Image (cartoon, rainbow, N blue to C red; front, side, top):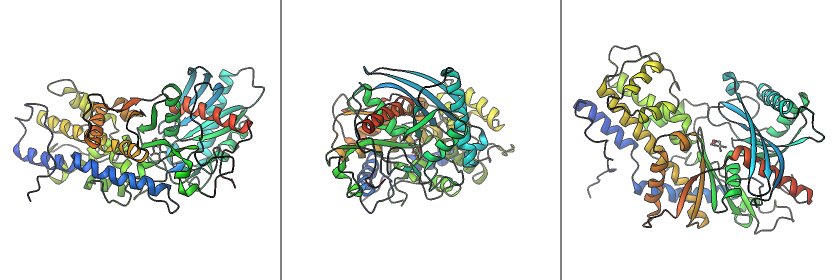
Length: 483
Ligand code: GLC
């Protein structure tokens, strides 16, 4: 049987006539490496479904599948004022959410830039910084003080095991964070201690993953939302499963939670295929993994999420330049050799350049890397950016398809947020096409649509805090029987 390999996608028309043959050969090699066929996507999804199941089993698997102790779906009638914080890669966002009780909400927010050293600083620096930002926010918006502590939903978007809603033991840092003495510890008491140190009237009611927040916030306004997804610096998804279908919870459930209750699951599926059985990893992906602070972890995320897309491009360019001697002849490569110098906006901007002569690509290379780039080089670089973006979008949707198959969803919405989803050119179209390729739809209208999510880390965290307070006021459990 003749193996034809992946079908090569069409280039933008008529653009490569001035690109030397030798370069085209190299480009075709990279195209073959980064192109993921419909059949391959189907195979990955099949394995994904079994890995979701495995993560819920007693023995566990690569995907953590963390029960989030959110056991209700929002009704839209939730009311009250809640604070929420979201610790992202570059900012800390503090949000005051007023839930209207009629599926509406108001938000007031401030952003605080996370100092560069924080990613790899100490845990005290991190939690004191958060508490100080909270203090500034509360002083500004509650100048008269508060009669009771303000309830806070803490969006902590890292894999944290939860034995109850207001606790989260960090399993491991992801997305390049590497702060000592946090892994293996519950981050809620750490934050609460700093809050007390700075005398801020706040009580941490719930710890929430950004995907769980996205799911719940989106359901508040769109009941047909089936999952919450983040395609951003990291990638992950959350959905509701049925308690009796979560074997690892058996024997740990308090008696007031019926077996047919729903439970939000933070999949943490950035860790999909850490065993390297199905993902088409390239030598560039291997290098990114080996040089990361946590080699062997987050195999899926490292191929598709925003933290890594610019780095994939940088490694391919270095390969074409240093190893193959094709690009940037006789130029100073110091900057190109600097890991992570190109963030995801770099390939995104390359794809967005509207000019025939790709003059914005030239400006970008000059300003960020100090390099002059010829027109044929720009064309190859543009094609590389397209390939990287397309691979990311196509692989990303395997998680959506797997959740649909696991839960038997044939219609509904997958609510998505994150910088890659919102800002990376053509991501939405490519993702929709990828989902069609996997699920073989023939309908004119996609039965499962990826839609922009409501603000999960603000509104979602507030709704979850409200649902939690309501449960507690009714004397219902919000965690494992022995938590
Ligand atoms: C990483 C984190 C996960 C988060 C995702 C998106 O995968 O481990 O908790 O949901 O990034 O921010």
